[in-house]
Image (cartoon, rainbow, N blue to C red; front, side, top):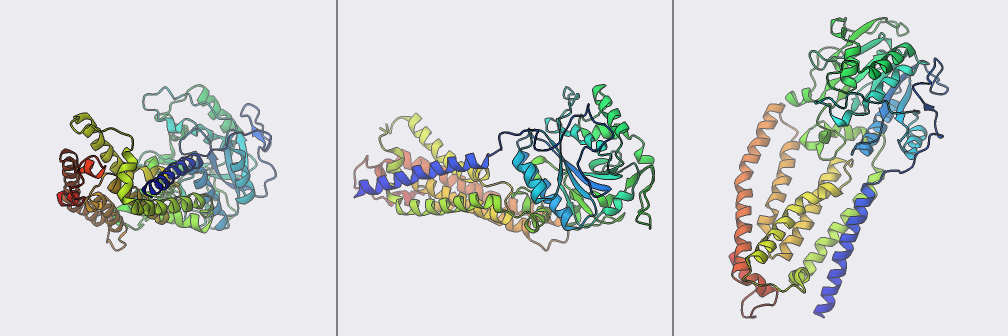
Amino acid sequence: MAASKESTVTVMVLLFLFLLGVINVTAAEHDDQTTSSHNQVVDHNKLSNKSTVVMNRNKYAYATMMYMGTPRDYEFYVATRVMLRSLAKLHVDADLIVIASLDVPLRWVRAMEEEDGAKVMRVENLNNPYKKQSNFDWRFMLTMNKIYVWSLVEYERVVMLDSDNIFLQNTDELFQCGQFCAVFINPCIFHTGLFVLQPSMQVFKDMVRGLENERENPDGADQGFIGSYFPDLLDRPMFHPPSNPTTLLNGTFRLPLGYQMDASYYYLKLRWSVPCGPNSVITFPSAPWLKPWYWWSWPVLPLGISWHERRRQTLGYGEEMGAVLLQAGMYVGLIAVTRVSRGNMSKLWYRGVRVDKTNPFIQMGLKLLAVWSIIAAYAVPFFLIPCTIHPLIGWTLYLLASFALSSVSINAFLLPTLPILTPWLAIFGALFVMAFPWYPDGIVRAISVFGYAFLCAPFLWASVVRVRICLTNSFEKDLFFTRLGESTTTTSPSGINKLC
């Protein structure tokens, strides 16, 4: 009877590990083959004054770009689609253009065209000659594709965008700006996350020549290159939309800061207070792993929920929910299995292993295995949960997963429950402290978070000490091996609990 129960548990554990592998393969999914026949392909050496995008109905356009080759291609694809749908929901009077490199999967291209109403312009990647610079960041290897926007000569004005923008309101008045307009979120350097331009084949070809001749570029990315092409923008006047909506200004202008509100400004006061111009567009020029579409970005950074609210209203979360439900079911099943098989877990982990209780290396190895299993319980879920899911779903699934995996460590190594789950309780409390909605400003919020961490530190340290003592006593006093059936049966199983 006992052997049957152990076999059942073994099968369930193996099934769990197999499903984890399936999820990893699914989460890492990327489309394989793309061809150039689906859309018009643009070779910058063959561009002419004719249109490179077919049959536009508007004289204005919002454009963005997409390329492959980074670990976060899928995330930027999702972000681009959310931005496109947000613009459509604001009823902008303009076409939506995606400048996509040839290796962007056809499935993604069709989704943006058929579901998001965008026009996709397929292009060859422009060579980045600055990759040998000492300060070059490889994330920006293909950002020079952004200058293709100057080839959209069938439009009178184009607003070029990065995918990490959130639009709060319609910004069609930007099309009245001049030949080039951008926002200075840095005192001396304008930001290329949003800028207005008048397309020109002459400018486009001149920029391509500038790349070939390695024009001065302080950062090796599109930001430095375009900045060097328009070096006098800081001295230009501020843009104010003309009262006549059909009037188009000539020249170059600085855009008010409200058209590129840096998210970091918000965190100081937990509200917007940009005095110049309308508060229209939020940008997130932050560290790559803190972009707003990642589920862990909120409540660490409060504005992450704003981006997910846009996604909930537009694109939704259908693509990720299958993996989420599968994982949730597995973790609930794992909790049930470990509870039912509490008494047999140790035998299952060490069946067939001859343990020399006097060998310090074996004892050390088992202790390290126990420690790593605890660390894995809190680290592994981050790599399994779909990273673009809604934060409320993501954190709920993370807490469920870490609880389930911690229960495996508790039962397999006969560890005390409360010390193992102390980090779990600390994380839950930290989320509540960070998400607390009634902070008067960002400084009070930061002090509260640091204060909470200071208070938690002694409890976390005490839990580490308690687990270490428990493991030492278990191995050195034979109680662990008693539970494995290697000692006399006179020792009470409850002895481990008394020690821990």
